[in-house]
Image (cartoon, rainbow, N blue to C red; front, side, top):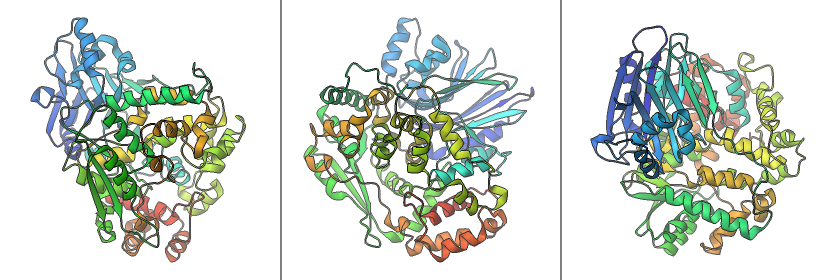
Length: 593
């Protein structure tokens, strides 16, 4: 896990190495163990390193193989790098390090852009071809690792975070009205390629972008499950349980590849508990597990320690518990928002940020259960969507998932920021109309997993853990497990209140109390219920001169929210005031005026 940055010039000039240095410095939290900058011709690369595999300096980056004429900057982990290394050695390649980065370099030399088909892992990387001047920008299948870009006629810049691009200067920071519409429709999610800033875009997941020396580029999407029934398991629940169990075993085993200890974020829910159980099944001993809770607020419980304790005792883990008092939240909110590459509404971002701070003192790598609800249909709105016809999938999705209608959204905004068309509905209809996806649920899961999930919760986990130099690995987003789940009959996923096939696996290895418990989440009651310290910060941000100058939201609307901070909720129950304030606090935190 690391952070990368770079610049490619198209006008015949030399890259601005000083700007790349600035971008690289902003990435220090993602890679506190090493720093490097490389420049040749029209390209410069920067890198911050977090040492996980090959702890020696032979694994330093940017990494150049002079014989192959390639230089790369890599962020992530290739879990099957040892197997690929053996294959490449059989083809005549010789290695100077034990790192997975070098495997990527030689795989690119051997197979070109098709090398991504062989990589099992999470990754974002840039490869520069010395002889052609061509640069390839690559992102993993599920978008676990981020890659932001900013381009004009003279140059392209890229970085692992949006704030790093801002540090390089010259970015158009005006708000993108379509992205703003998406942010307010999907509880803070803005899918690739957009961000809320007009001048910054994201490389989409499962994409190889080849950038030519003249600035032209072409994108190749290299992976997309069909979400159709093509499995030999038919509708047999027992066969599906065994297949999912085997695939999850493989996914968890892959993610133990490291030259440093690996722990688990254990919430006590089904997903993280399954990870602990499968690691124990593999013979892992003295496993470090971590749980966090918050003080209760307004009658809402803030921790789920009883469940994580149960799992910890069952598998004899070295368990660490952290209870956070509400008076620590204001400062924690500032730090968490400062760590966000883009504004996020999910209030558990602050929980992940605070938990990551504590966990990073103990280990450098953790496994966590993010993604299981999207991959295995665990959320309560999926049955409503599943009841629709395939032709009615888009309407069912809008009714179940959107925060508000286009008319309600437009009424919130100053007219200058309100797009004339319903941009979010247009996006959903285009995705739902794509070939494949047998049922309405298949179409919804395809959009959630491949379009929305990379920008929440996946981005949230990456941003909050990497702010402390902590690498988070997500077994439920193993691409082979996702392919299997995509082919699984909807009724088996929807069974037992959601994630039925996963619960069947859980019953073979976990206490029943964990499998049959009500669905939980990472509660932060003080944010959800606008406790006084949080509300004070919200009032300060929305009343600040820059917020008034910016004028994104109708002022009368903002005043109503502030007068009744807990009375205005989205259709899914989120606090509207927090959604509005999160955007403004993020803009101010990153100096965007």
